[in-house]
Length: 343
Image (tube, rainbow, N blue to C red; front, side):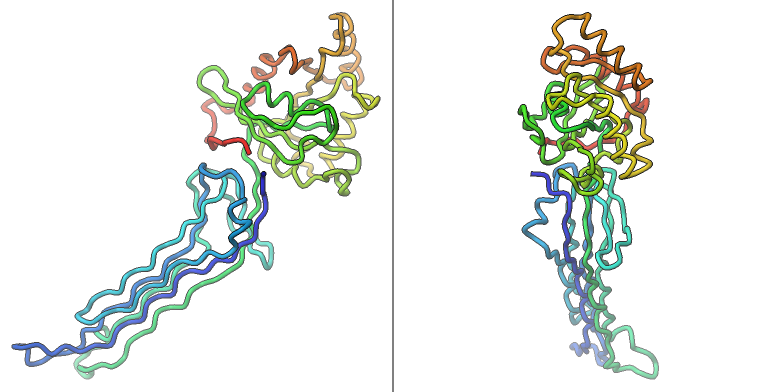
């Protein structure tokens, strides 16, 4: 199950108090202050990790506390520092201040981290207050208080390719054929209720990370169907693959379906609608003859004024050509992507 939003409360560790202590040793006629400093409190850090792919871990745990620093000791001994707390989140997580919605950081690269609550500094022991006029200081400093805050985490999947289209257009079947992902596939709409990721292997040890989101229907930007809340997961993609059903089972027109989905993308985000796209005509195996297939492709290309790529996830027709075309949009040396496991 993909959990893509969470709210957590974090608190750093308090700094340890400084120590007030005096020493009096044999053969040391003039003793003096020897109170050590307090230890520093631990900080809370959120880190993008490839070991997790969902915010599910935050669903049952909402509080994250780092350890306090220990007080200073006599004989100028420094108090033990509190351990930092590292909270692992999926690559692509956005961190927001919960109260005002301010973006604190975008953890879009594996290993990237963000200190959310800094640990308090330890207080000085009375050794620091010794002077020629104050040889028996009884002053010491308390440790700094802990920091605490509430943050909202929002996951945007990091993928190269985003599959869009109406429900039952064949997106999930396509993903299952070109990768090891196993999304739910059935002959009725809305079989996909959450985004799925798959990794297609390309020649030259390249990987193509593909995100499949639930289908869009008319009015999705107003909350119809599953709405547009999942579209955030393809905002980072390099290219969109718009999957059209060549002969829709609901009797609709593929051209109208294309325009409907494009409108919903534009209503959600101009940047998303402006991304490069590849139009795919799926389920070509339902057309028996090659002549029928050619005629369908030509008809839709004329209506859209754009090139379309015919495929069949059942027979494998056009899949290799599709992946090759998609790979042309990858950076020359690739980009760092997480080694996702499929939710």
